Image (cartoon, rainbow, N blue to C red; front, side, top):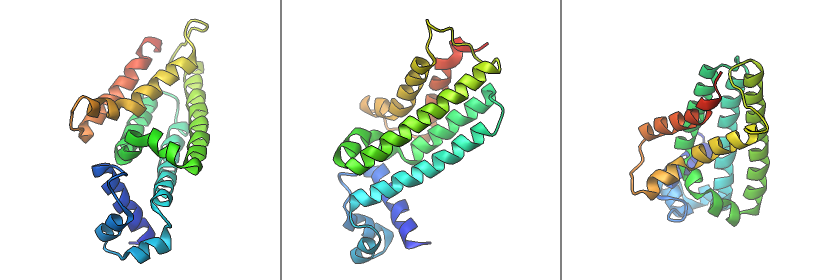
Length: 192
């Protein structure tokens, strides 16, 4: 395996298990079976590693968006898209536990994250608007604004893990299936 990729996969696994604060670059190097010098050859610090993991996340999410946008805007396509999103939330769960702290600590990450979130929100608006145009949903404006419905979906999806863990629950992958169902329930009143 490529050393850079090995470092990123090892760091992601460690961050998911223990959080970013408890994991040092030395711990990542040791777990990856490389020297600290080798790690620093590829990444200058932990913030750089986190930014590169974020770029991996973006790339993975891009594939989920491309799959959804290349299909008809059916309920089944939307369900698969939400499930794909929850799989990625699970894969990169450390980021969703720590989003605010990570972006507050790294201005470059904040700028990139803000840019991506705006793009993703717009793409999801377009997808839901297309689904409405094709008769799958109806958002009766001005009483129900698509942006408000989408915001609620984002809040549920992006904070579901934190909600469970703040209640003392040890979260497992199957819990994310429940999260995907909750997001779909937000849309249920608007199905045609």
